[in-house]
Amino acid sequence: TTGKPIECTAAVAYEPNKPLTIEKIFVDPPKSHEVRVKVKYVALCHTDAYTLSGADPEGLFPCVLGHECAGIVESIGPNVTNVKVGDHVILLYTAECGECKLCKSGKTNLCNSVRATQGKGVMPDGTSRFHDKNGKTLYHFMGCSGFSEYTVVADVSLVAIDPQAPLDKVCLLGCGITTGFGAAIKTANVQKGDNVVIFGAGAVGLSVVQGAKLRKAGKIIVVDVNANKKNWATQFGSTDFINPNTDLKKGQTIVDKIVEMTDGGVDYSFDCTGNVKVMRDAFECCHKGWGKCVLIGVAASGQEFSTRPFHFIIGKVCTGCAFGGFHGRSEMGGLIKDYQEGKLKVDEFITHRRSFDEINTAFEDLHTGECLRTVLNY
Ligand code: NAD
Ligand code: AHE
Ligand code: ZN
Image (cartoon, rainbow, N blue to C red):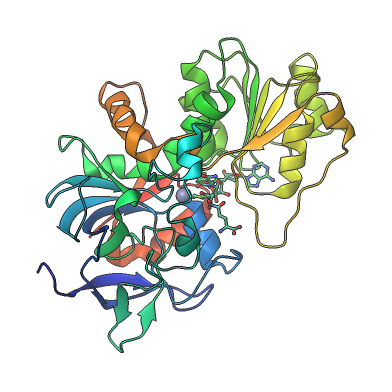
């Protein structure tokens, strides 16, 4: 098949807020510095649902969504040296070129090499490799597009992994688990005894919990409006659970409650909801002088987050991260190893498995509140 378009199954998002269309599409061969991958497993992340909803200012239609995925290299374009045909790979929506200003800074995992074209739904040369049966061009998504059996990505947007690692599980390292874990152990760098609060107990929030637990944090408080999340939180290592709809005294705010539980506020807070009101609470419940808030949740288009500047004056810090601050190409091997050695929970996040043609039902799973991650197989 090398050098020729491949006809394969994909789930195309033709319009916001409509079910995906499962159909045959055509995937062009990889050009220079590009790799064509046979996607084996793809999971749904809340961000896929967010973009499908139409709330993402970078959301383009028609497109092939999906960004939490793993597969096998089918063919490589000219000038690709980091992977070879047959390699097992994880796709990276946060690329790592090692050469741009950001990569060279040593201060961030963000990379500028392909970000501009990625946000426009095209490959670095400005064109798409996806076409439907009518010849219509389909946009790429987050540099990955895992909702197609074959996809083409930039060589800086994937990493080869240990072929012994089970792809049906480690596909989750492509987003949610890595994001939450890294937010705790890299961005916040939680230390023994630190008090932390996590708003939102989805896969991202629960992975923050596992990172905090690994670091032997003091109080690990989980806040979620879904009471069913209490059991999950406990299972991943939380010490306390608050449902703001039922667990507050009359007149008490969630911030009051957390400040009271932690002798003045938390050392680290994390927003894993994407709700801008929650972000404000997460920032304000930080301890005076040093408490740091890490924003992870993605807010809808037009949403803004506000607070009293006084909180900054008294030393509270607010930051955020993408992909947990991990450098995908240089650090994925370590995460896979952590998983293989039993130091990083991955299997525990897989609540549902479905075949790819059930993808629309999988989006419904995501909204039931019962689901951490659904893994689809082709
Ligand atoms: P999810 O939907 O599985 O989890 C969100 C949780 O938040 C749910 O349990 C929900 O009940 C809870 N919640 C909703 N509103 C709440 C409120 N007002 N107060 C408390 N809890 C509330 O989603 P996920 O896949 O875990 O992703 C979480 C967020 O992180 C999403 O916004 C997603 O887009 C974003 N995300 C960001 C990155 C990144 O790199 N920055 C990576 C992955 C996901
Ligand atoms: N397109 C959105 C921004 C979405 C966003 O922030 N995405 C995260 C990853 S979410 C993964 O589930 C991210 O990586 N952000 C950094 C970046 O460079 O995109 C918008 O609001 O425009
Ligand atoms: Zn994601």
